[in-house]
Image (cartoon, rainbow, N blue to C red; front, side, top):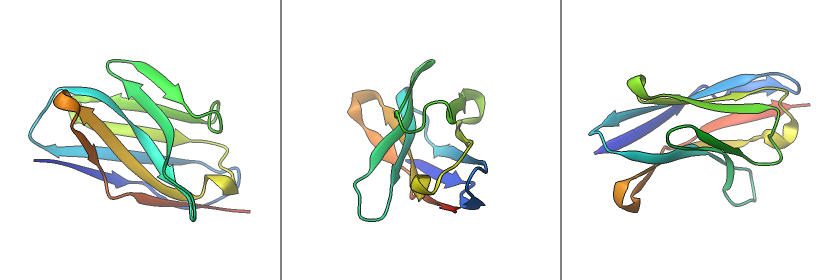
Length: 116
């Protein structure tokens, strides 16, 4: 059984930075894609950034130039470096992994709050 655990969320002022981590535990699978999603109050969950294994990245237009997604396969950990944060980045951020057979896994989320 695979479990994803996010960490690194918190409260930051506008213009600040945070780094989120997603650690994978449990049985190993072939990973085809992974990424970060977020859900703001009253809105649907949206894609923030993804990695198509091994190294192809994709970013939402709203975070291009500010956020960087990366991974350390040896540690089964994925990161999201968030710079120049804005109040509109406030959301719960979720880790997501897709493995063989189209099976996907989600973390429980970590809250990011950006104040004015």
